[in-house]
Length: 256
Image (tube, rainbow, N blue to C red; front, side, top):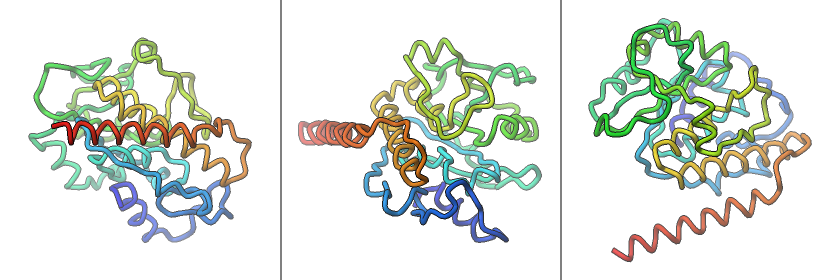
């Protein structure tokens, strides 16, 4: 189990009533959150990356089966997850922010940054030899703004604000449709992570996360009997990608 799974089970253990999401009658796999008959856990392959992620999750997201933060943790081994609390901050979260191996960045729109701190529009290069730790505020747009505003430990950290020009440069087009965005150009949490990986020149992992997200949505829609907007070819496309990636890794390993 990865960090998001652990947070899910911890939150579920203290819940006083069942979390009723759309498709509440579906018998789900508790790890991938799609119907057990459509479970994708056996297809999950995690990767060691040059990037790390911290998911700061609003309480409303932790138990939500359509949450895409989980997909980041499926693919990127070094993913941490914490439930956001306004007053009770997890000591492990603060320890991570001060870990000398990491350079933390809050990923948030520039227009909402009020303090005089550095704002970057893509992943900075040549500024530090530390591993970037991307902090994603996982919640609705309204919740994320509150989380940023009410978290003093984030206010002095540098910000990465992904712009439309970055999306255009990386030829990125949002494909996520499980939830309707509150504003134009808003992306799912997993899509933001995909962009960050690509911006950090981790193109293969970015592609894997993108494909994994689409596979999740395809199986999720099958599970709740929604009209499927994802091309069924995603099943074979994802498997073909994995085979090529694993062959490349094997060739590099034995070639050395």
